[in-house]
Length: 183
Ligand SMILES: Nc1nc2c(ncn2[C@@H]2O[C@H](COP(=O)(O)OP(=O)(O)OP(=O)(O)O)[C@@H](O)[C@H]2O)c(=O)[nH]1
Image (tube, rainbow, N blue to C red; front, side):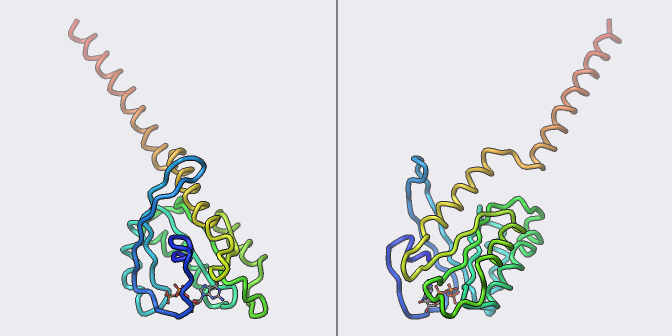
């Protein structure tokens, strides 16, 4: 998916990813976006790096193969894993069911994908990296989620702001009291 998004190429051999990093600049909704994409390992052997990228990522594309039920089950665990590291569910996320060109081998239905996306409260795309189908939509969708999050303060930020303004009020009234006492 990442190779198709960045360079419109689809290598048809499987070179297990350990961690590949890409940088690209695109325009989305008439605004430039500078993307740092980390393509992480799907293989169980490489999950040691998981915590590190979960800590740092601004947003995540959680991708499974519609021809592989196990990959869907792995995708379903992802949000809890992020929560364990970030202690919040307010993380920009897009769910992707890839390989829809292999319809005859499908093991995960569109409805199941939609169901998980509903649980995740996130956008959902079915894609084909082989055909470059809906690839831009998935990446652009994530950028939109990140922008949405940036424009709306999180619950935690709201709480902190509320605390801050309460503190300011308290400080103000203490200052007044002190001034009255010295008069
Ligand atoms: N037919 C088809 N094959 C795909 C598609 N996307 C990926 N593949 C193939 O699936 C295999 C795995 O693709 P990767 O992109 O390496 O998958 P990955 O999940 O990143 O796997 P790791 O690199 O092991 O983490 C490769 O042989 C790809 O050519 C697709 O949309 N359609």
